[in-house]
Every structure is written in C-alpha cells, then in structure tokens.
Image (cartoon, rainbow, N blue to C red; front, side, top):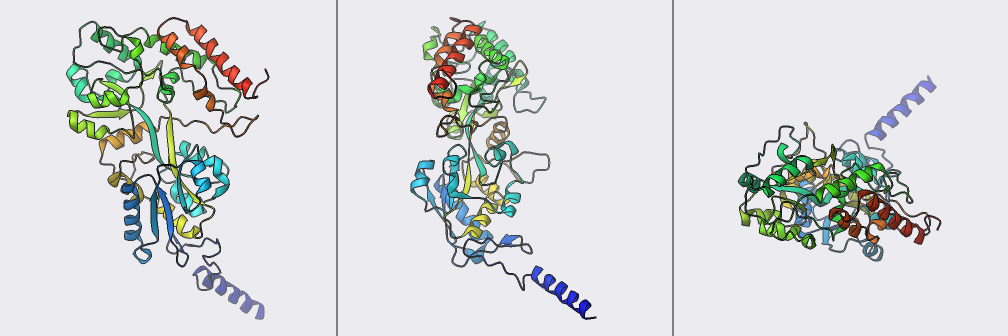
Length: 450
C-alpha cells in the first residue's frame, strides 16, 4: 500500500508540474520558457527589445502590432531603421536584439546569433518557402527568411493591349499565353519589325550588357544554374545546359530589341528605371525597390509581374536576395525575442507587412492559404519570386573568407556575351572563353592548380 501511495503522489506531482504550479522554468539568465497552455513564451521581467528594421513604416507597424496583440506587454518593442545592414555593421554594433540581415551576409557573423527555440521554428515554417529557408538553416535554425529583393519579369498590360497582343493566360501561370515563352516573344517582335504590330515605344525588351546581377536570369535559358554542383571549383560553364543558355543569347541577337532607327546595340545598358519612368517598353525587368506603383499612376498603365518566360521548355531563374531576422546572441531577453519572431512570421505579422509597407514578404502560396493578399502587384511578385534562386553560400576551400560566387562578379564575361549576341563569335567560342575566364580566376584564388 505504501508503494501505491508513493506512485500516486509522484503522478500528482507530475500532473501539477505540467499545469505550471511546480514549474521550474524561470525566464532569466538566457533560459527560454514556453507555456504550452497559452502557446506563447514567458517574457522576462523588464524585457525591452531593440529591433533593426528596413524602414520606418515597418518599424511603426511592428510596434503597433505587438502592442495590440500583447497589451499587457506594450512598450516592449522598440526599433531602429538601418540602411546599412551588412555583417560588418552588425559586428561592430551589437546593440540589437533582433537583426535584420540578408542571407548572404549572415554567415559572416553566424557566431553572433543564436538558434531559435523549437516552437518559434515550427511557427515560422507555416507559410515559409522551403528552398529559401533551408539554404542557411541546414544544421540549426538561426535565420527566419522574411522578404524578397530582386528583379522580376514584368509586362505592361496597357501597351500589349495597344499592340493587339492577347492577355489570355489559360494556364494561370501569371504570363499571357502570347508571351509565356521566348519563342513566342520572338514571333511578336518579328511581327513588329515587319510592321504588322504598331505602337509608340523605343524598346521591345531592354537588354543590359553592363549589369551582371539583372542579367543572370537571361543566362539560365538552358536550365543552367551557376555552382549547381555546390562545388567551388565547378561553376558549370562546361555543361550542356550552359551551352544551351548561350544558344539563347545567340538567338536574342537575331532580333532588333532596340526599336529606334539606328538600333545601336551600344545603347544596351542598364535602363530599367528609365523604361519604367518613361513607359518605353512593353516587356522589361522591374526590381522590388523601384517605384513601380507610382509610375503606374503617373503613366496610367498596369504592370503585371511574373516568372521569366521559358526557352526550350526551361523557365529562367533570376537572382533574388532574401532578408530576414536572426536573434542576437547578446540579447538579454531571448524569450521575448522568440515571441516577437513568432509574431513577425504569423498570419497577422505577414498581413501587417502586406498592408502597411512596400516590402514583399516570403509566403508560400497554396489553395488553402488563409492570408489575404489584396494587392495584385504584391500577389504577382510573391508568386513570381518563388521561381528565382539565391546565390549559393559556397566558400573557396583555399580561402574560406571568399565566396565562390564572387567569380560571377569579378570576371569580365559579359563582354564575351555581348560579342556572342552580336554574332561576332560562335556559341562554342563563347563557352570556351568563359570557361577560361573562370579557370583563370579559380587558379588565381588557389582553388585549382595552375
């Protein structure tokens, strides 16, 4: 009987502990406490969070959302707007509890951020796009992807209407059937050059042979992606996929994309902001930071965003930058920090961003999505960005302080691409020259033997 009573007492203590009466978890000295009954974290006494934010609108909206959601803890969240969100800045300024940083910068200060609590991880993954969350969190979840930055393919519905080009999108992929492949676009520009389509603009699609970041998507027409092998000594320039991508560039050169009389290809420089301001092309690239909504109002037009058209059946994949949050290792209030991150990636947090800022949140679209996205441009952009790719986080084995992707920006390969576009060299010659440029760079950096 004594043994039975002892067992009953132990069971009672376990049950009471589960109810929190005998809870041993105290949110202090870095200990994070989660209350399963309320599905929230227990905040530390006197908690105050200084959060880095990308702009004033987001900072104000975030504070308002926190104070409204947790009125008993109003005033906990404060913010600082940061234009410089580099790893170097955060390394020298560690007075932020939550840091807002790009996924490519964070690895340089990974030792200054802490792993998220498991409940915050589970919460943040609900609406997350897996491929953007897994890149840096393969071993431990330290980064919460939140926003997209980058170029997207865009078309002006008003100008296409003026050209008499159908806007029907039978497969609902975001692109009209009439321009959802480059082969179809080639037929439209041929018709324009032959006078069968007429409208007032100066370019059918602006090409920028002097800006590598925006040009990358046009190099993926053959299904090629740089460093797809995830090996620093193998950028992939010797592959059949890259050869097919170069063939697309050669095909582009068969047409006059600059529609002035001279068609001076030397004018093929970065002009996407001018195109947007002057409404001078029906097809273009637009970045998330450009004032596209303002120019829509000024020019009385309607831009639509979509993934890039396909070539040879391959949908092109432009580069995208991912920014998000990490919790500083120096925070005195990790419980409050995890609670704020949970709120940021919640339905309420994402809708707050959509409705109060010009930021483009990372949201996995699905038929059962319970988040309301009323802005058509933002919906289109969220849908299109899912086709983009990030720069892979691969360091040189010979010098781990250098990212392998730096090869892309250091080599003068766009001059080779321009010669190929002008049909001054063949696809084979272009591929050989670019392979040599990459080999020389990798040899100089000690990644491959000279």
